[in-house]
Amino acid sequence: MQEEEELGQLGYAQELFRSMGGFSNFALSFSIISIITGIIGQYDYGLKMAGPAEMAFGWPLVSVFTIFVAVSMAELASGFPTSGAMYHWSLKLGGPGPAWFTAWFNILGLVTLIAVVDYQCAQFLMPVITPATGIQGTPLNTYLLFLLILLSHGLINHVGIRLVSWLNDLSVPVHILGVVVIVGALVLTAHRQPLGFFVQPGPPLPGHTWGYGFVLGLLLAQWTLAGYDASAQVSEETVDPHVRVPWGMVLSVIISSVFGYILLLALTLAIPEISKVLDVTDAGTPVPAVTVILQTALGSWWGRLVSLLAPGAMWFCGLASVTALSRTIFAFSRDDGMPLAVHWRRVSPRFGTPSRAIWLVVGSAGVLLIFSARSPEDAASTPAIVGSISVIALYVAYIMPVVLNWLNRRRGGLVLRGPWHLGNWSHAVNTVAIGWTVFIIGVLAVANDFIAAKTLAVTLVGLGLWYGLRERHRFTGPAWGHDA
Image (cartoon, rainbow, N blue to C red; front, side):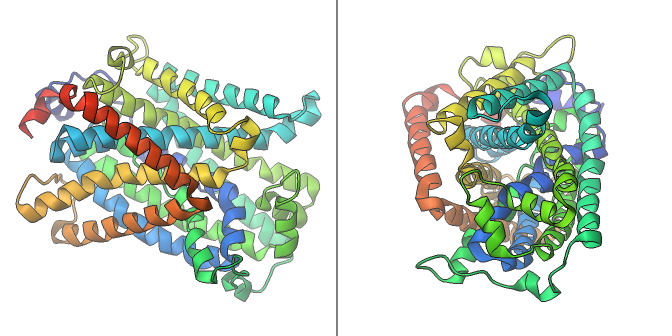
């Protein structure tokens, strides 16, 4: 096959099973974006920042500019479809230095995403488990449930990409049906606010203008619309990746944007009273705003039942994220970029999956949650901070190869382009994507008292010292990168 010949020319054998079709490739990114996970997890934050108008204007604003970023990345995926995605693009376009940093920011963004999504899944499942088993939802029990969820993701990914593909295919109708069920239930039963309520601004944050809160509230949409690079991460397991991978990335963002906006409209118009919703979410035992809205509209029993869609979506999101990150680590280790790389690049001869990389991901996410705060309870109480760190790290990894491609185009250097491309619009679209990414990283950096910015600054200094003192002299990338 053409894809195997291309890998062979790069010095790579076809070690992973190439059995993923176009829909499965799209479904992987769609599952990680997971509009139900993102909206339910961050709705409280957006509502507090700027009120209903955050949903009305913030979501479409972020959606449009995220599409610019996605299509810019899709061009690169079409031109160079390998596992490792952004890391390999940066290597091809800028050399081992930019590639090394791209890989580590991608790893940081995804492992943080897995930790927070799977812990939120455990939080939403615990109230269901407690009445049936008598197990109390203590921080320790919630953390143990979080580990079981992580374990399930590791086992399924270990068994093979076909099972992962089938489950992610299932995730698409589950997410879309979930939106339809929630919207339909609210339309039929909720006391709806007038349409003008959807564009009503909330009170400004103390000491700031409403616009300041609105800009900070963009995290609601931006944290949700991330992770679509997963389609590129499984390029070596996708049939006809030059075309199917870029379409998987772009369509996952577009379809998520449309259905996410419908869900936000229905939820916001079903708010009984903003102050009451926020009073409950700020109480000693916080309840997500979406849960309050659903239970108020549907009653306690039906509200809880519909709310079960949330942990289901989160479970699918975590599963797909483990798949994406394990492929990044596999590709980076294949080029000797990771410590103990010889272990993480091993492929299971029975299942054809990067099994050791999968379990490294699972273990890292489990440990990360413990060390992200003094206790699992503290870690879970700051989803906006963890979300900010994840989005910043991911978007740094997303935009680095786009910037390198943009610079090379200006100075007549190497430009990656495959059969899926934007033609003469490439430069303009890339420029908009770069500008938006710089803006949104700045916004997320200042949110939550600069905690995300400080965390990533320390991380960047650590990576810089590590690279300057050791990796700059050791890491040269694969043989094909020397001729790039």
